[in-house]
Length: 411
Image (cartoon, rainbow, N blue to C red; front, side, top):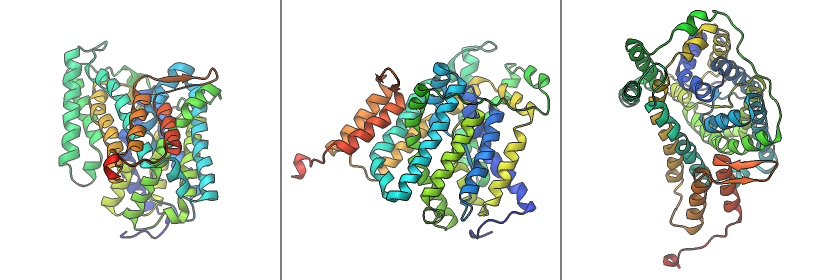
């Protein structure tokens, strides 16, 4: 298919749908693996989230797939440790409802409203802090000894996994260039088997068919108020994703179905994930890249990818296999990916020509960094703001309140 011509559900597209799930699979399962959530649940919620997105945008469905968001890795890990999985899922549900609230504001005030609250000078640095805050965790995963391996073995496995991922990103062609994570994991896993640090016991014990470890949400105010601000950065990223897929498919999805509907679809998908115990959902750039390469614009292909994800969620041995991947393998890949996240935020500043010599912009960026990375926290008894959430709030407030001043050399 050479151009976007709407939704056509055909059995022959099922194989292509599985291919698109394969493209998204590596990043999809990394988030639950890093945060302690169940990978099979993440597969299930990615599937139902994508289907919900399509249902909400049924008048003109963009060909996109929704799955685990990297922006929530640190908040999920902290929240699970602080309040438990159930309360964290309550926060995820509330984060999705924030998207829905923003979509309502867009319906009332237009698209320009969200750009005023979340301009690039705020969102760029917030995205950068996500990668920078995560980077120490990646280093620890790649360099620390475990129960079955030494520090030297960990660093060796991590280094090879990293090199393979980089090589595929740079030298891969076609669809293979979109799955560097899978290649890195595969080679790192094979090497881990050869040096004897993989324990296959979980795979042997697991059944072929099993119900994922679903977790019902519990709504605690502290966990909700901690999680909700994190959704601001992925919300504005969503606009960029819609612009990209519009360009790829040569169809203006910002006009029809409109940001008010696509953002609502993202929010409902995230809230649904929280209801079952899965990570928040977001649109996947890897899949958009695959759409561009294959010219497969039919959004029904994503329906097949979603159905495949749901079916795989009930394969017990798949989750068991993922649990046997050694930590250094994941750590090596994360060394690159967390740095890439920070780079994406930097690209947003450059692409939008944000002048950091302007006092207002300089102050906003500086205080977002210090607030998010410096360990600052604000405890209001009922809720405590810190990290990425605090940085986002500080950036929004400064952007809305600081006056514009010209530099002396421009006067």
